[in-house]
Image 1 (spheres, rainbow, N blue to C red):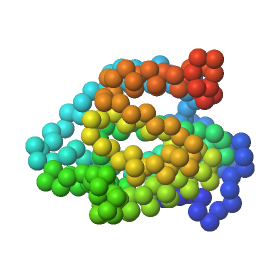
Image 2: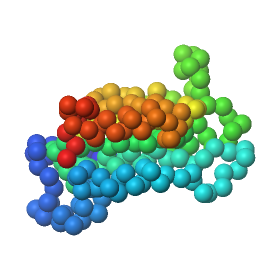
Image 3: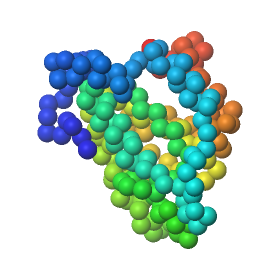
Image 4: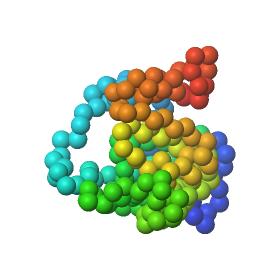
Length: 203
């Protein structure tokens, strides 16, 4: 799902506006500068809770990571074409639904191992990599970045998403849980100024 397929690349440094048929109110429903949503973002992170929906004992949780990233990439492409932006994906398990999925919901099917990848016997791997490669091309074309925060004790599909993260210059943070200090400290450093943090120029 790429809104710029077959279209001229957006002018560098231009943010979509009324001339594009989008009002600032429409854009701010989905995207705002980090400085305007810092309090809400901190509150959301501090109040994160486990999904209340019941997961059958013989199944994995439903996760559509690929579809979510596709929507996020397209939103950025429409609202801030040619202007720097980052997608920050917070993943707590493998994608089991839709494009980019790496395993089925049934626990009877084991998640692919490194041996499976070496033997080219992971049935969903190539398809997922191809999907994320398309996401990578879209993000690179738009000048946007994909960051991944994978917080789980099991695999989440970093091998499949690697192409999109590398090609866009994103970062990967791996931790055991979202409550782990590695995750919390890393996230804080991203938003800190260049003197104390990574200098990613969030405003």
